[in-house]
Image 1 (tube, one colour):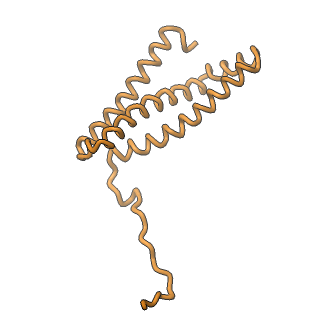
Image 2 (tube, rainbow, N blue to C red; image 1 turned 30 degrees about the vertical axis):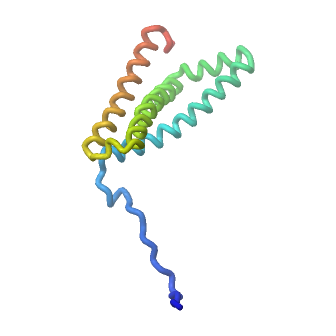
Length: 136
């Protein structure tokens, strides 16, 4: 029989940000998680909107006034970015699920493209909203 040592063995530790070289796919992964959390907050905002709608005209007017304020618009801008970035990020993950796009240059390129898409799509949506009176 083998004998077990009585002392506590040191377990290996996971690599940390100080060990890994920063790269754009790491940023994409962090953004993906942050956007998921943001969309959970967005779901709560949507529930608040539905509750305000069901609570009557005064509650709905107060809630929409809150969303139309600068902090409210900033939150909605972030949610718009999160929605578009997660759409792009999920396409990237779908491609990875098929076994494609794992070469470092390809992975970096599609991550940058996803971030750029989210930024441009967010800007376009908000420009259209501003032009059609959706931001007033």
